[in-house]
Length: 128
Image (cartoon, rainbow, N blue to C red):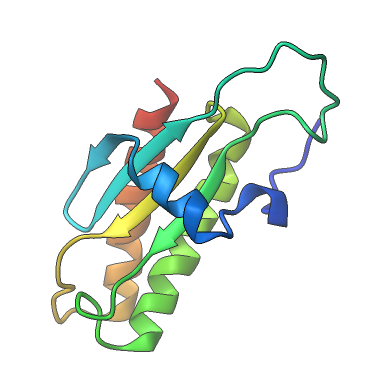
């Protein structure tokens, strides 16, 4: 049984990877986030589990939507944790979660709870 971790291979690193993923189709849109996915093409060669295509995550949390760095960092941690929990069940694709509207003035705890519920819904929808 594989552990649900979040290794470097499960992250988007380069701007070209983000651009390709953002040009994919929109999977879900909610109160805070828009999730887009760019599905990787299957290859015909036999691959080892280490090099097999897998779900990868990129995050875009704009300063204009969340002014405080602590808010942006908390949202990133929450989305990463939601992705980590469902990463092995998601189809192989590059997913980008983007904050699309201004975060209202609520407590950080309430914001984290709302963001986690929304992220879980989006990733559940991406499994279908």
